[in-house]
Length: 355
Ligand SMILES: *[C@@H]1O[C@H](CO)[C@@H](O)[C@H](O)[C@H]1NC(C)=O
Ligand SMILES: *[C@@H]1O[C@H](CO)[C@@H](O)[C@H](O)[C@H]1NC(C)=O
Ligand SMILES: *[C@@H]1O[C@H](CO)[C@@H](O)[C@H](O)[C@H]1NC(C)=O
Image 1: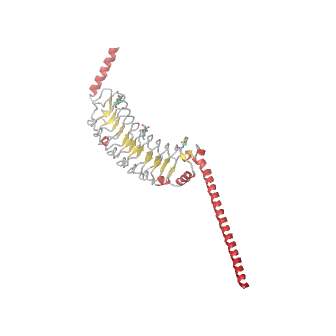
Image 2: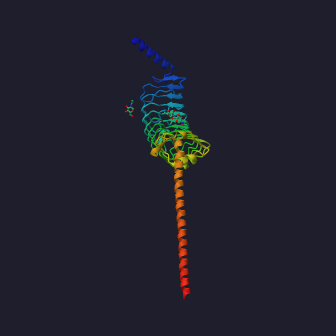
Image 3: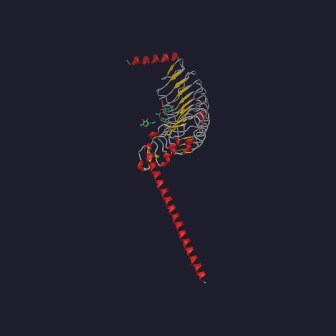
């Protein structure tokens, strides 16, 4: 039995060899060697034998940890390169530099904590870059410099805290930017400048508590802005007013809203802007003030503001009455004084006439 299995193995390998000496052991090569599938092949480094004509190379679910310099110099025809679910922590400068026809690169579920400018050298055709589930903590200005044809960038579930101004500045064709589940706490003006084709900006699941008022202004194609599940307690009207698009849907639920009257007034104003759609307005709940915790904003707002209006009204009326009263009193006093003066004057006169 054992011998039989051994023989079978030899035979299969033999047939593989005869079919092509280009197919690495553990890989499967199909379609005239255009597809090389090496998923779950226990690889710890990039395979050395990949047919030069390969257009799709699937290396997912292996243990590869380094992408050395000029790794794919013999595979210039690659269009799709799948490296998700490996152990990659190092991408050497120019690691993908020969892949000028590559359209999709999947590096998700790896251990990448830093990427330098050299990482994107040569990837001039790249349309889609998957980098979710890595360990990136910041995006530096030059990191995506060479990706000027990119349309979709997925940075979901990293640990990104800072985005430098102009990090995305070469990406005037980018349509989708996924930054959900990171650690962003504030959005500075300029970080999204040049993203004039961006349609989807997903920032859900961060710790955003403040946004500079012009941060979304450059996004003239924006159709969906997801800010759900952040740390926003209030908003500035101008932040959203500055979005000049044809129509944009905005998601804001699961934020700790401070449902004071100001916030209600703000939302009332926002909802009058025709081009903005606050799709989950009816789901917004309050965290503060304490008495309103867990109430829906839309349920409490009118009462709250009626109460406030009534208070304001009472104060106003009181003030007016006080002022009026004071004026009246003043007037009376003045009149009394005048009368007194009159009398005393008359008295003086009569005194004089006595002489
Ligand atoms: C992953 O890579 C690290 C070095 O970056 C190495 O120490 C570790 O053994 C690798 N793990 C596996 C499962 O290959
Ligand atoms: C982004 O990555 C996440 C996690 O890998 C995945 O679930 C999601 O579908 C991706 N989104 C896009 C638009 O590629
Ligand atoms: C509001 O919340 C409910 C329950 O969590 C959910 O099913 C619904 O899709 C949400 N609506 C919007 C517009 O997000």
